[in-house]
Amino acid sequence: MKETGISRLVALEKNAGLKRIGEKILNKERISFEDGVLLFEQGSLSFLGALANWVREDKHGDKTYFNRNFHIEPTNVCVFSCKFCAYSKLYANREEGWELSIDQMMHIVKSYDGKPVTEVHIVGGVHPKMDMDFFTNLLRSIKAHRPELHIKAFTPVELDYMFRKAKLSITEGMRLAHEAGLDSLPGGGAEIFHPDIRTQICEDKVDADGWLAIHQAAHELGMHSNATLLYGHVEQYWHRVDHMERLRQLQDKTGGFNTFIPLKFRNKDNDMSHVAESSIIEDLKMYAVSRLYLDNFPHIKAYWPMLGRQSAQLTLNFGVNDIDGTIDDTTKIYSMAGSEEQSPSMSTADLVTLIKQVNRQPVERGTLYNEIRDYSHIAITEIESNPLLN
Image (cartoon, rainbow, N blue to C red; front, side, top):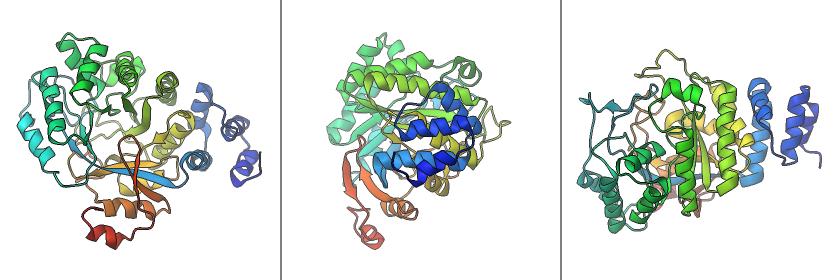
């Protein structure tokens, strides 16, 4: 191997286990479960960051992706009672809940007519009256109005409930949703796969096998999806690695995942408010190890409304090559839980500036990572003055 700064860093590492892992990564060999745990437990932030940045730049150079998107959250009323959730209101006690009709959601979609958004992201609580027929009608309505708009919608938690209520198999349910206009799946609802943790934080919703089966069914229909992990609460490092291992195995089988998104636990106004939030150092370690462990995932995303803008910038040197999209203040899931961004909206110019400030190359993408426009050499003043660019 040619001598480089990163190879010298690995060669000088005094911890024999970490040095061996570093050599594997530079030789593009897969690291093991035990390696993943060791990286979390003993890897310094500088060592992890350097390796993760090397992998990121090997895969993508300086390119940092974003898209122009908006969210629809049909309801925050939910039959489930996840302890980490500050967003949903139980169906039996829903004074602070909202329930949008199809007409109300179509009004949101139509408010973006003439604007260069490429994706609508639809997730929410699990409402017993919002069933398979309700949501397939919504999908058809959106596609009839704006056929080119990519619909990324519904976590396996929502889909599992819909399918069971409609007495459909996973394969049948996914086929019907896809035919109605569902283009891809977001990554939510995964939390932590291991049953010991799932029992503590989200016992009553779809388990790991069900979550993975729904994503596999989507992949087998030719759809793509994302994956998440909720970190920084009651889990241990090995639970995180176990979670990523299951994702890595499914990706080996289907190749259908686009992006992995670590999600930081926030402790405001939920049943886990007594659990301290992770530090920025732990956040950056999570991103770096994700990039090193998930060798078959093309992209690692930092969801900036959850982390905050400055922290999201930092992740771009710790394996991250995507920071989500404009969002346009259309999501409440994390702002209600106490995230850094209480009004999550950024213009294209804002996103481009944020990326350029850390010497990365801003590239607008579609949901499936087709490159739409490279903003590297476009002046911010030009972006701000041109509605088609902003």
